[in-house]
Image 1: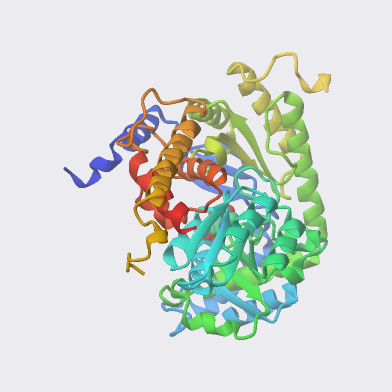
Image 2 (image 1 turned 60 degrees about the vertical axis):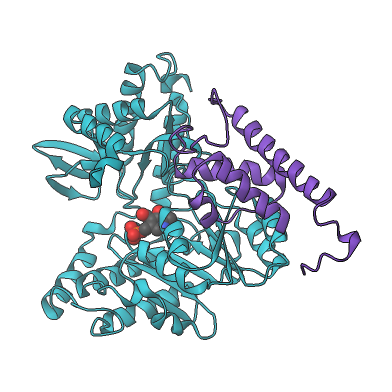
Length: 405
Length: 101
Ligand SMILES: Cc1ncc(COP(=O)(O)O)c(C=O)c1O
């Protein structure tokens, strides 16, 4: 048996899409020219699937900070946070994050994926219990696997189900740690966080919220779903990423717990990897300043989100439950999702294909994400392309043009 | 514990019988959940492989187990789910959890 035999069925599908030229998982942009535009060959592509929520990747001040740090401090730190890889910038960014969230402590990780690995594997020990929402991101499940805690999965966005599972564990020793997300990355729905916080209180558990897709997106100050729900004090740890609204790469965790800094010497994904380069840290610091100073970006983003969501709903697509910057159209199956994706790309629009097991309930999704940098005209153009391809593939009725709505 | 001298502990009597029916009941629940799924499998036995025969991916397996958890009012930790390959494995894992619950 050859090493890769176990991948045979997957490989067949992968190669079939590769040779048909419609493999969403191997697309390369020859040149990205703005938060909303790229070139493939010499074809202009409108980007509608980049998680670049605030469009800060080309912000002049952000880029200037990165350039300055790159020139002054070099291309990389060549080491871990606990060896030679902690610079003043890393500490400054941690202070800025703690200040933004009004927390005593913050830790910066090399990616958001590693922040989840690093926090979940460290805070829940061998005799503790992690309770994960069924739809949590892979990094949360992988973080749980990396640690030694017993892991329980509860029904998505279902505080009663969580309570039932905590009740079953009531006589089992060990701390209970609940993990949910702000905006879920696949369908763009939000957690009923106040209800989860009440369950957490009732059972004396701890609560971790991953605000990867909601930092800079939700809340009057952009602090995410916990801010909207008014339960920040109940969220023991907030985890997030720099790779979406902040336009960089890296992850973080903030919290108030006494003794927080011990995590720096017990969290393996923090300790055994190189720290983010100074240019990335400087860019992220500046992006965080922009996020705080420009609430108008958030308003623009939500207006764009509502425009896309309402437009697709009017056309007759089946969407996730809430208008947020992640807007997913539910496809009848993977093959139609691939066909839809490649026809949109041929027409000049980039979106994402999301398939099980990355998606809930076996759904095949054509996933879009909007940016504050999109103009209403760009969103209209995207909607026109969705309408044309949707009709070509017989997914929406020809009659249901936007004029009818 | 295992003295066995105390007549009223009934280690092999109705208690063992109870365990049998319990395993039977668990198997029925497992098969029921599968028969009620959108694409019910043609044939089910303890030897049925969850991945190869039922074609469930990692998340679908967890969803399937969640249905059974609700029916039996137990919790199956994820590391236990990861070890399960056949429906027979699942039934005996559930049996073990039900008894210790
Ligand atoms: C909920 C959630 N957490 C964590 C991550 C990982 O973030 P990063 O891309 O920074 O590794 C993502 C995105 O990929 C995510 O959607």
